Length: 143
Image (cartoon, rainbow, N blue to C red; front, side, top):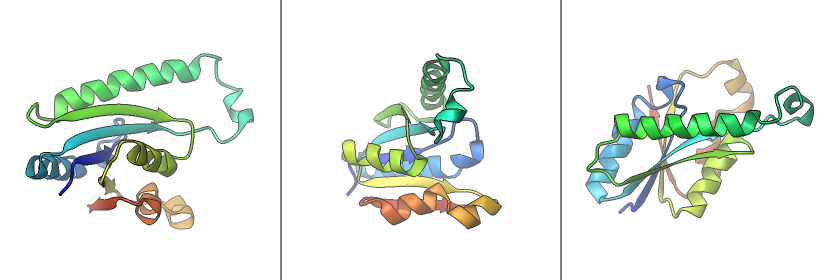
């Protein structure tokens, strides 16, 4: 049924993947699908904020995140599951997840919904926005 499963993670926050990772892996095993593990570096949204960081900050951050996602996949994804991983940046988190899914023929997006705080109630969580806007099936794993 599924050929490409996307798992969006924040490698710095285990609660963003602890329960979703096994669900994504089981779907890949069941359908022989490829697992796309994606982490997002959100945009600063304002040039004024970006100007306070060193000129090479974003390049160094991308390199650090690429090393982190590579280690994450090595440590957490079984070798029996076909996988790829990516760091995406330069926009809103939910848009970057959806764009990656569209560009890589993803047919299932797996996200973990963890305890929202007040800002999530006011603005909506990224999982909620992905579920609302993605053309793919979206599986939101809850606590």
